[in-house]
Image (cartoon, rainbow, N blue to C red; front, top):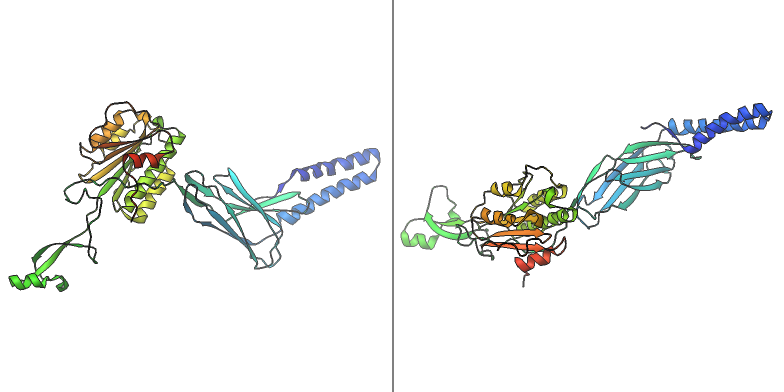
Length: 397
């Protein structure tokens, strides 16, 4: 519980209550003395009413949902219930957002014992980031507005606003040791999720349901169907976080581009890895959980001003496999060398894509073989530039 606070009106009454008796005594006017004592009495009664009166309230906050993409709606539901045995007074609820930069305010009518009420409001999601809500403050005041007292309820919650995701095609598949690695179309597999590959002799403990009876009858030996798991390619996204190559619009555009590429690659069945020039490396992974971790990292990232961090070091530590695609996201301020560094990371093989915002590389040195440069003249138009350079989104017939 926080201590009672006198308002300006209360301080005015206190000053008037002290001065009027003095003036009344000097002028011999008893009415002024009575008015002063009345002002002091009202102030003291208000203090006793608010500062020492108890109100038992419970508050619960719920974010619907607590993770959204930038620009998507998010609602906050607040439920307040009276746990006391008496009717609650009128209170004001204040819920801070983003460290108190914005507030949601509303008044709650008196509640009977056990009665509850629900209020809802929407929070702005126009920009990416992690935003704290709360703690919820319930403020009580007296009928004359002379004194206030507040209590903190409903502890802080965190709203995660992911970067905007645009619909694009995934990184191109690369050809490695697997002969199907360069194929965009996934092979057709049986009901078990595996594809027939070869036959091998029976080994004690093998599932008899995998016996290939026709071949076993010809050879007079039990032969087992040898299946292989579906091929799964890999993709790595390297994001240039250096503050020296970004301004605010280009950094937000880079986060959105990384989120779009990650979403497209994981939807295409690729194992994805996110690497930042600040040393962050998520490792390869698949599934919705891995995508959520990547999006949360992109939501929390801020420009990095450490002079020891650079794009060359991040790319040199990637250690790409032959069948791994690479996407590097930077700006024109990084210079034409960024394209060459990304191409060398792929060792001349195809599958390197460099996304450049603030197109300053046009007319520079020729693009290395096997490398695709997606030039975006500004923070907008990434999806169109990607479609023109890498390929349009494939739609199912």
